[in-house]
Picture 1 (cartoon, rainbow, N blue to C red):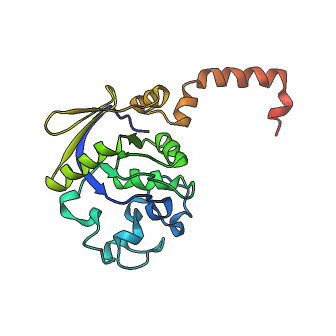
Picture 2: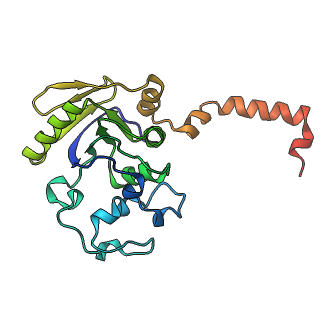
Picture 3: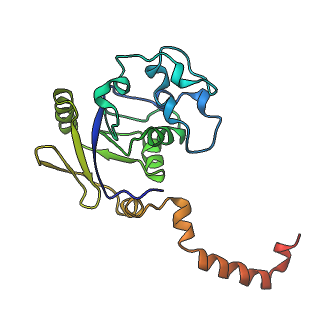
Length: 213
């Protein structure tokens, strides 16, 4: 998992409440268990005019010009600004996979669905909860200024606006440690690989039948 310390990026506004995981990545794309390849189908039903399928050539599909991710001013965005209860619905881990594969590193919202919130941290996507009035203000600024950017400083747990104002946010200390060091569940386990190998060697001697065949 890639380390995240600080990043300045364009903000894309998703001005809808209760965006569920089926909207984030529709069910027909859940056949793969790889973490990559889902970006082109992020928000598929809102993003394209036709119905997408796993074998579709997305480069030839007609786009909905009014959808936020298709607008030129939001190209290259890595911060998604959203409304309350983002990521509700089913528990599919493909939702944060799709957001990350598209290019998003951070989602800011007043609230998140619990399972999506937890899955995001495990996949290097940072869900930041801010007061609804603060989020409202950010939406106004994003709409008013083309190319609007925020700096997300995870080390110091602040969001820095273009005018220099700072918005503090909270992240659990363990999750923050993992993100700063690029550690997912596998990475955390591999930190103890010497102990694991030592245990395996010991067990081969005390219970050799476990390793037979």
